[in-house]
Length: 446
Image (cartoon, rainbow, N blue to C red; front, side, top):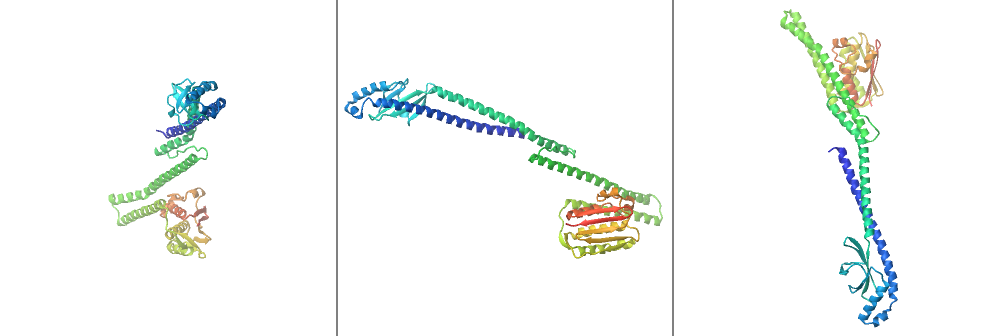
């Protein structure tokens, strides 16, 4: 059973029960009120007739009479004072009956009045004791079937009206619910489309209610999934492309070793080339694993670090590369500034930035590492990065100058790793560059 059907049936059931209870209560109150009006009317009639009946004799008069004479006299006067519909009762026995019914069992009349069903009619029975002589009562019997039937017709009308209102309310609720659940149906269809590979599927968001918020969250999720899958496809494509060069090199040189007679010098050169290609593949694999590991594990080991000590460590670890390329590395150590972070990751970040600066610099160039406040800057005066490539340099495997990068052992993963390290520390990394003037990378910590 669909959710819409369940909700509509539930609402209809609740409305029907509620309306039925209201109808039953209203009918009961109406019957009670109508009966009380009729009872009060009969009481008034009995009071009027009772005043006339008291005029036929005093307590002393009845006391001086014998029982037979008194009873006969009372029957006679009862017929004169009371109209049809009344009976005179003595000690629970009817001695004068002016009603249309046979009175056989007065013990069943509990209380002052009751309604008895007799032959399909509803009879109101009401009794009232005479002040004197003692032991006598007047019983009123009135046919109230007409008013009772009117009440029953009204009860049926009430039930029909309440039932119609419940049904109409259920229909209106079903229509409104259908509009509300339309977004959920679209959400289901979009989820099914995503499961079939249509990653860009989104839902139309209407309003600002909870369902709309779910739709917005679903659209954000869809965008993120699509972006992640696109990035993965680009990553795999770039990886396959980057692996093709060293693999081709290994296959080519190995075939030469197997099928071509080479001199010892040529064999050694071929083996060196195979080794270089293998080292490049190993480095690329290690960096790729590091990058994937950082995406899978958001937790890092944070500790309080001295920024001055960190940059001193970076200078020591990068001392060899600038000297080998005839590039000067200048590190302006800041005043002792404390930051929270992972020492190994941050050291790897700045070592990679220094390496990039050295590789981009011509012999005799300079790479400057400085710190101002909570921002560490790495600058070089090298070849620079074209403006069109700047937005992409932090993408995995992206290389602005591919031939230069491969020739120097680059894999296009360094800045992608660096960007991820900065993100894990809650910081930002800004890259400014101009072709022929150099590059400036600024890392700001929170």
